[in-house]
View 1: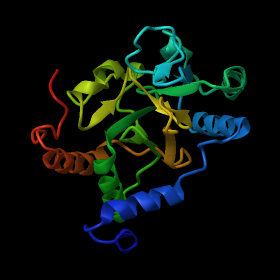
View 2: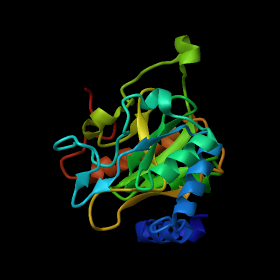
View 3: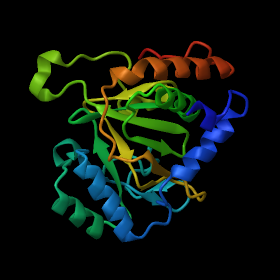
Length: 246
């Protein structure tokens, strides 16, 4: 694997080329492809619910003035109970809301470790080269890489569910420039999803949902290590390897 990616010099470019080569043709996909991708995600156990979609410019389809997360949030306040893996329901949503993005609710079946794309690419190389089971990975063109893992706690095992400062909720994302851990009460966009703007930015699979979900702790050390490297390289962010305290 290391030979495929090359050495550290120029590695980022080779990683990006590799990811582009593996990326499904989701941008511009027809409705059937979109529906099939959503059904595949649900079939892998990811609970889905409809989300907003981009409006002209940097706008959002919701009616909230100055929406802080355009095209990145659920359309219903009941998204946690609405989220489902039921194929028939997801097919109905996809057909009746052809422009909608979809979110997947974390902390039920899966969590998401959300890192800066540069750190995530380096971590992905290391994980694969080490033979570690990575699981599904999505890339968001706004600069994040999303590692899907098993959840670390559900309402059924409340006593075993433990919060920590790595937890990230949608409303606190700006406070977490490094590693964000989406668990119970949070969500992320699931591919295929379109982002605001005129540049065709999207959320797409790097490794699809057919890959089994790994234990998050098997990925955590390498992800935090690469987030530390990335933060140290960012001017003025030398202390942001871990999320900032709230």
